[in-house]
Length: 621
Ligand code: XMP
Image (cartoon, rainbow, N blue to C red; front, side, top):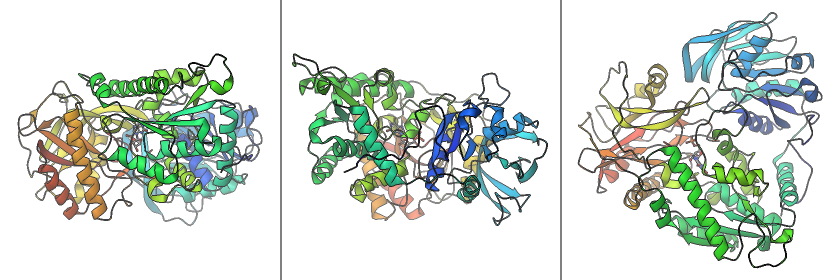
């Protein structure tokens, strides 16, 4: 049972909590991730908007300026208060933050010769800098930027350079003001946590722990819900399961009711498995409703990814409303049907397992760009949020923190460590297209390749892209040539038409393609469900389930025969889904999976997605 406590990391008042490291959010995809990293280092952190007044930051131990999708010269771009430099506390700018520090203190920023997205090699120029002391002189970092610092501000020196970016890190050691162009907060930057730790140590911040954090969430739930009750849609994924368990734990079974909607877009045997898992936990207040007909009916003839997401989110809500009425709960947000008097205890709130990345990618913070609308951020839910009718106990957490919290609550670790599965389920993994689409201009790709006739969502420099994928072919279809992995970064950087690079594991040369218009149907969902089950089974058999973080399997509406379809395998390594790299698959496993998929009726081709995030996203839509 989680009891009340006092560990807070967002202060309700204007001034920040004394001793916290404040992240000023310029809308970068990683702003909260920096908060996560600072907490992992055992330090208290708070996120504030970029323009927070310097006087409200008095008492902070340090300031980190996040990245952001804009250019410092752009009208309306985030402009922190320059008086932060007078506070006498350490300041670290990351990406946009780094550029803004240069801009604000008299340096110059201009568009880089080459836009860098993904891996870059960093060379340390000033090894005695407090940030880099004792680290190797060259290591890999993660970049995602178009602009760069061209001239240092007075008093600063260059601390590190990359091959294409001369001022990749800068510092004024005396004033303890630093800037790094690379994202030290993502796991793909080597030594990133060490660099951050050095900065955090300079700040001498107040301490933070997960146990205290869990206590704070418990207290917050109790306060927010008051006398009301909570109705919650449970998808069976890690986030909604942890949120549901937490609500049960804090409020008790009588004040919580769960509903699992079978959308027809779930994985094979998913519903049965979820029911069993909760039964084992003694959580029985979970109703199951089969609404698959309604979902397929509403999605008929829909091709656009954002429209699909919106419809899936809306259908979830419609079903929830109908079923909750059938269950006699009344409308969520209104007093229970049938009760003559209206008291607070008759009102049901809506519980959601939203975690932080869901918010940020739906443009959840002031300066963030819109990447994808997560199902729990559609307009109808936003309206309920504004009325204070939604409780999202995990909304500030990253996946790794949700899992740690799940374990803290006593959930079994096999349950907590299952691969993440998106709320819209297979719906975002079945690509729909009404007509064949090809880019106008692709430049030169000097290898046997195929431009796929469909587009997918990506993220570059904190902005959304919707572009084509290019598939490369090799002599041995189960062995990805080493050079192709590097091309998965260089091709999207150099050719704007592409945001993904694939390797074809079923063919050695591009065959003629046949495109078949397709939307979301039960038949396609059934086919993908089988394909997904094959991959899941092979992954567990190869003992790689826990090594690979997530493994979406995607269905594409083209093949080599009339009505044929193709499959994309998308194994990724990640920690918190904000960045990811393509996970390598042993050739024997890739061959076995490919052979088994080609044996499914209707599957003509198989591809392996080699792209990291950025420039792609993990899911295709
Ligand atoms: P992307 O594709 O944005 O995915 O790189 C990041 C992580 O989020 C999951 N995801 C979702 N989860 N509702 C969810 O609950 C959604 O609408 C949604 N879209 C993506 C995705 O599976 C990955 O783990």
